[in-house]
Image: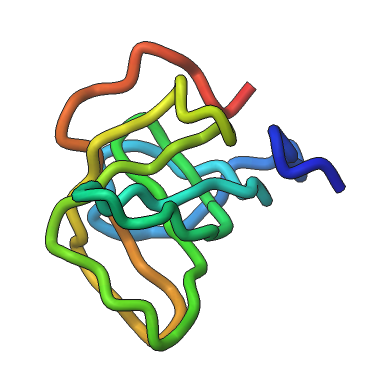
Length: 106
């Protein structure tokens, strides 16, 4: 498994009835949480994604600020500013503060 860009998708959009503005695509992508202020990036796994947000798997004891950036490549060139919308143990739901210009579900 390469940590530079490793994503797998089952190719099926999740059919979940909920309040999300955009359908989610189940994926398995290594990403990094950038907390800024000289703190080392922390790894996470993106488990589903849409044009408006994502669900992350993080270490259960990882402390997260309300807002942070997700780096989608190890070099950090592709990133999205996010805000936490919910947290349940090691799962964190985030929504993007700016609409992405890329289609991550392809």
